[in-house]
Image (cartoon, rainbow, N blue to C red; front, side, top):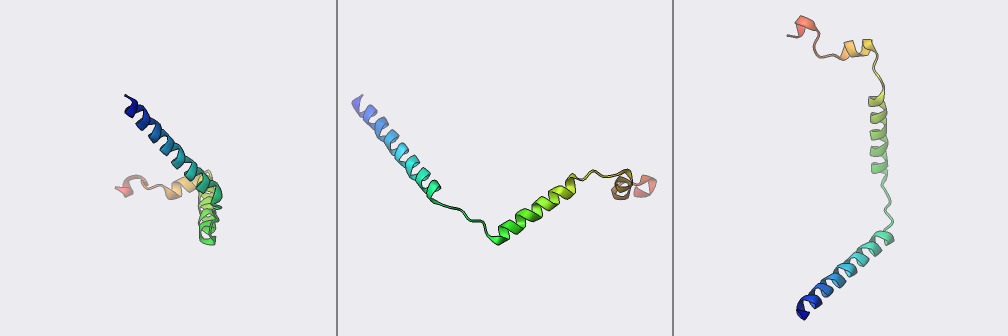
Length: 72
């Protein structure tokens, strides 16, 4: 019974030590994004803004894929 308790305590200490190392690495690492990442992020933002624009009825008619009998 004592061996089980010692084993659980050892695993708990090992897990806490691993967690402390991971937290230390996370706080020490200052991530800097590259210019390519910044450009891609800006392009994504522009695409999202373009997609959020509400279409008028003429835009919908122009872009619709089924235009009556001729679409068949």
